[in-house]
Amino acid sequence: MSDSPEIVQKAPFAVEVTEGKSYFWCACGKSQKQPFCDGSHKGTAFAPVKYTAEADKKVFFCGCKHSGKQPLCDGSHSKL
Image 1 (cartoon, rainbow, N blue to C red):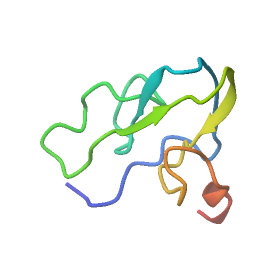
Image 2 (tube, rainbow, N blue to C red):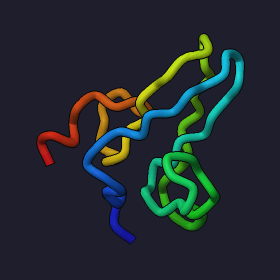
Image 3 (cartoon, rainbow, N blue to C red):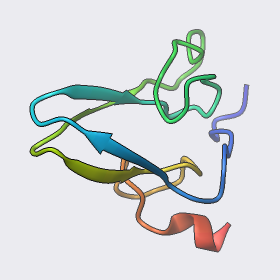
């Protein structure tokens, strides 16, 4: 397997999160439940990234899997 994640989409996933709730972002790009982990990384060097919401709000999870601010989008998709 490649040591690079699969690019799911070149745009972020907008998600309404709930304060205090933890979310597990897919880092490998193989999950069928994007942008969240479904365990598809098993057997690879990838692991999900935990995100705990600090407030009820909309956040933008990285869709290209190349963000420097994982699990959130930092605009890296515009350079791919």
